[in-house]
Length: 236
Image 1: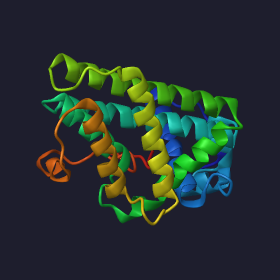
Image 2 (image 1 turned 180 degrees about the vertical axis):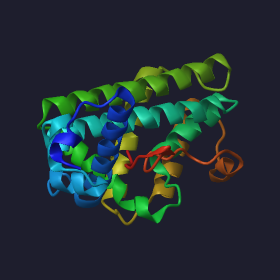
Image 3 (image 1 turned 180 degrees about the horizontal axis):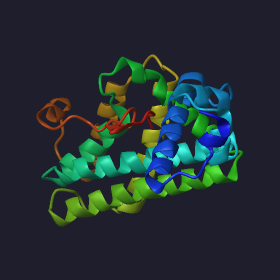
Image 4 (image 1 turned 45 degrees about the horizontal axis):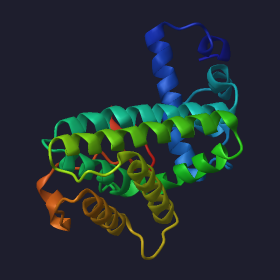
């Protein structure tokens, strides 16, 4: 296919498909190589197109990173919400939320995907567009925690605490543990991070929890590698 043919106007369906392929390729390559060592040419090669077509859609590597993270977040949010909505109690939904953030899904190929978030946070400190995506992401997930706590309080499952500061602390706790996992800290593996978080959450909200409780629930929609038609790849 010639470059001119690649860049020719496409129908909405084809354009969306192309865009999605590029975003997924960007997530895969950045997860493997790191943002600094990823080139537009690497992403184009991954899906067999010209670098010019990637630039036509996204202009710069920074814009591609921003859009890839936004695409990933939206996909993960939709799948995570669906999974939580299927659970009967607020405690189960909160447990699922924690698991989605910290537990792997058993695919060894996803281990490096935690690195994506290190690159994302580093770029957010320097790039206003990436920073805006990070703020929106954090706000959305704090709102999820607040809504889960409110639901549990209304159902009589949780203690009467202020959910706003709780959501800030839990969100920061999950991010901090994710960094330790990404850096292969010898004492912070995904399972221990999950159990530590759940012990804190259960203690603050006043419900009973034990490590074996989750074995009776559903498998996590892992943020380290959600599979929902389009392969995503990162942990948070």
